[in-house]
Length: 93
Image (cartoon, rainbow, N blue to C red; front, side, top):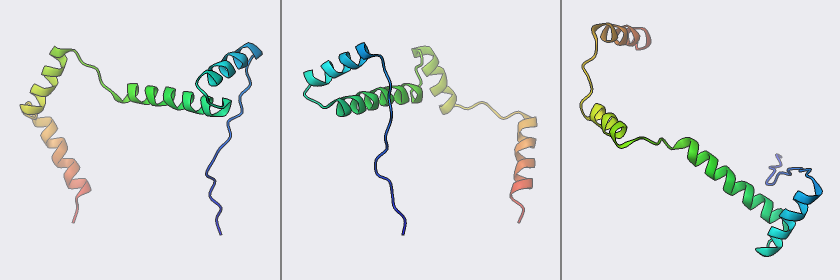
């Protein structure tokens, strides 16, 4: 029988003034210290992940990307040979 862990602990040491500030903020929004820390960390994590997954382009750069997707350049002869060679190596029947 396998036991699945549903919760994890995160120990945190901080200066007393930081602890007091976080505790005050938690009380202000009506949350426990644990709830406040977890929610704040989750919001920050989501912001960071979203920022890393998003590509920001200027209008001109976006136009260039979409133009290349709609009208891809012709493949160079060397690239065609390399693709055929790859296909021959990997798709043996």
